[in-house]
Length: 230
Image (cartoon, rainbow, N blue to C red):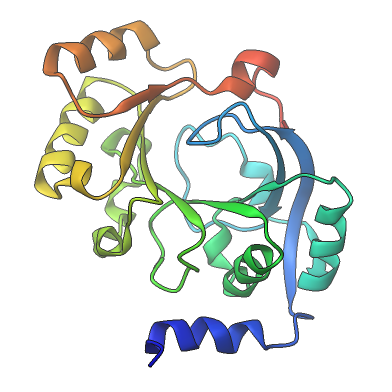
């Protein structure tokens, strides 16, 4: 007998997908980070975010945008002829309609990733989606918003990301990795906050502690700088 969880997703698949979402932009670029870094990707940036991280580079997506149906979003995405899709924000899960959008993208055969802050519940995200959960560090200014119960729903298909601004953040991340046994759950990414920490210094710390993480630099910023829509 199918699980209740599977039936829930199946029921969602059968819904009419004329639900509207507020979309900040849809664009084609190289994925800048996480598992598919460097791969041509269609980005769907949804509008709105309940967080205000001090290093945020997409504050323009907090408001505005255009109302679009899931059907229209799928049609626009299809025009790019690209297999990889990233749903991002803002905080995409701030719109409840993001869940059926992710489902429909998976049903269309795309490889889908979700960039989420981890401040909102991820339990209903389709398991085919690669969840990239950005656990907020103290120096982000928003670490009190972390929903650590989300860790229970992480699998080997997912990734946890930490953006590190300085030594305080790094030491905090080490504690979180150990406390929640993260290496046994999913891949762990660490990135430097843009222009706030020397990448080589973070690399030295990781090597000294033999920390089980992957250091990444934001490829899109190396190529195009701090440019929106890239």
